[in-house]
Each structure stands twice: as C-alpha cells, then as structure tokens.
Image 1: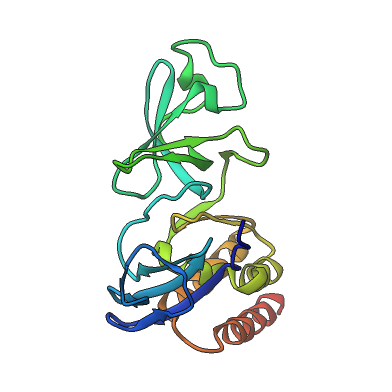
Image 2 (image 1 turned 60 degrees about the horizontal axis):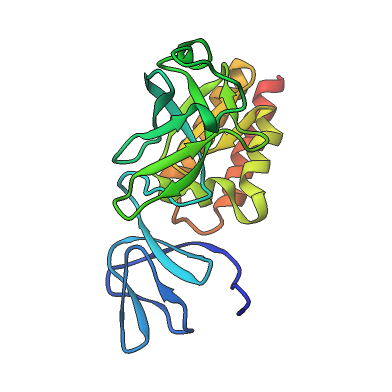
Length: 230
C-alpha cells in the first residue's frame, strides 16, 4: 500500500492554474490533461488523501465522509431527525446513530426543531445523499453559545496550520469554539469574548487570501484584549 501524502491546506488559485504535477489524483474543482491537474474555478487549493481539490470561495458545503459538522434540527420523525448541515440537501439522523435509547415516536424529547448538534458525516452515496451520526465520543447537542457561518472553503484559514489560528482565538477570547467543516462555527463564552471572536473570524473570512494573516489576527487580538482589560 502506498503511503498517503500529508494534508496541505489553503492556497488561492485561479481557473486554469496548475495545481499539481506530482501524480496526485484530480478531485473536486479540478481537471487533468496529460498528467497535469488544473484548477477549474477560483478557489482554495486543498490536498487530502492523495487528491488535490479546489473548493470555491463561495457556495454551499459539499459533504465528505468523516467531516465533523454543525447541524440544525429542521424536522422530527418517529425514528429519526432531519438535519440542516448547510449543504444542498438535509441529512437524516436515525435513532440508531445517537447515544441514547429512543423509543419510537419519542424523538422530540431528545432533539427538537431548532436544536444545534455536532455530528459526523457517516456516509455519502453516489447521489450525494448524506447520513450523519452522533455516536462518536465528543459528538453532542450544543447548548447555548452563538453560531456564525463562513464559506466552507475558509475553514482551513480559521483553524490555521497545526491549529495555530483557532488556538489564538481561544486564548485571547477565553471562549470555547468549535469549527465545523461545513462553515458553521459555534462560540460560547462571556459576551465580550464572543463579540471579539466574531470580529476576528469575520476578519479571517474577509482576508483569507492575505499573507501573514495569523500575525495580523494576533496583533488585533492583543490590542483588543488590552482595551478590554482597561
């Protein structure tokens, strides 16, 4: 078995730009000619599991197996819920995929319309129908906090290399923050901390292609933190 190449995130590319000549496989938003892979659109280059992808700067989230996403319950049924995961189609969450023993017809007692949940994409079929699960440790209902949305393509920027950006945000705002791969971000903390985190994330969204963005955000957070302490 060949060794997988490491995940590489975040590089703005133009339509027709060469994105790989090393033998990777063409993925989303790319096309190949004579062994060379090109970007098919303006977007963020992403290499994962031997595929090179280009995700559009705008547009809805395209689910992939294993993604952890933030969903919103939009419908309850006798043995399942329907979850909006910020993609073109909602995803069913069956009672067999939650950590509770749910009696038939008792689903609203556990999750009701409007509840926010952290789930994992458990399957995506050829027709792009998605299944999600809450059975893995850490997956749960998210109580309280605030939800904001950014384009899914900007998620790697908010997380940063090795978690550098998200760690900065948590350190300077004192908030608990979870970034879903679908572009939804859950933030919980005191009012001032949440407000600062939202301002910083909006900066990251607007300036995602800027070089040295981590240092710029750090300087912003340091300045605002000093103001808060006065």
